[in-house]
Structure formats: C-alpha cells, structure tokens
Image (cartoon, rainbow, N blue to C red; front, side):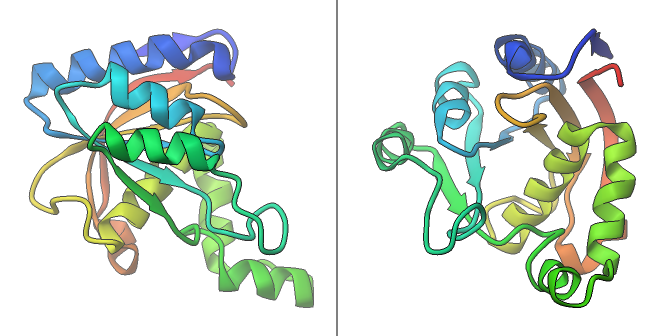
Amino acid sequence: MHLFEMAGEHNTQRTLELGRARALELGLRTALVATTSGATGELAVERLRPLRVVVVGHACGFAQKGAQELDPARAERIRAAEAQLLTATHAFGGVGRAVRRKLQTYQVDEIIAHTLRLFGQGTKVAVEIALMAADAGLLPMDQDALAIGGTSTGADTALVLSPAHSQDLFSLKIQEIVCKPRL
C-alpha cells in the first residue's frame, strides 16, 4: 500500500499509475473512476488502458438545482474513448440527504458515508461509485474491480474490491488498499 503525505488532486497521476499496475498484476478487467467535471475521468480513460473503464459522475442537481457539473465536451470525449459514463444519485445520498435537510436528522446512508470517511474521503467515494455502477448494471458482480476516488478534485485513493449492489452493501469487500492519503 502506498500512502500519500497529503490528500488532493496532485496525487491523480500517481493514483492512476498505481491502480493500473495493481489491476494488471491481479488480472482485473474493470476500473471505476469518480469524476465531477470530467477531467479525472478523461485522464483515467487514457491512463488505465487496457482496462475497461467506467466513469462515474454526480447526478444532475447535486451542486445546483437542474445543473450538471460534468462538462459536455469531456463527457463526449469519454464516450468516444469507449468508456462507459454513469451519472446517478449518490448511493450514500439521495432521499436520505433530503430527510437530513428537511428534518435536521441523519439517515443510515449518511452515517455509513461518515464512517467510511474515517479512512479518507477517497475511500468513501470509491465504495460509493462501486455501488452506483453495480446498481446500474455496469459492473460484473463475479469479478473484483479497481475503484478510484478522491478528495474534492482529482484522485488520491485506489481500492481493489469485490462489488455488491447498494441493497447488499455489507457484501461488498475491500480486498486491498492500493493507495490513499495519510489523514
């Protein structure tokens, strides 16, 4: 396991390198990558070959009502590179977040998210995008996969995991931490 001294996007290139190398060593076929604007997703499509790449972005309205944060030109380039692109409600958000905002009380999904953040924001993101991709049918359920997340922007965490659907969260297993920032 590689530990970065600090979290953040300056670790993106190295995270992709470490993740790709470990995925190829293990014979993994699929890599999941979180993106907001599409910058990390676009870079991942290029750097993670020959892996099948699934880029996972925010749902429309995440940051601003009716707005999509994913840059349309980047989305088109990701698709043109034959990667799959998923924008969906966060597995640890959605309706539970609406309850918190309206009633000022946390729901189980956000408690789980806060617990995963004990290992770093990128760990929470990597687990969450794996659930989202599994729920969308974009992730083979009988194969381990590489999941890459980050803290704010870029990538700084890579996990090898055995996937699960969100309704079976506790069947998901983090097999390895390839890299992450020190907290």
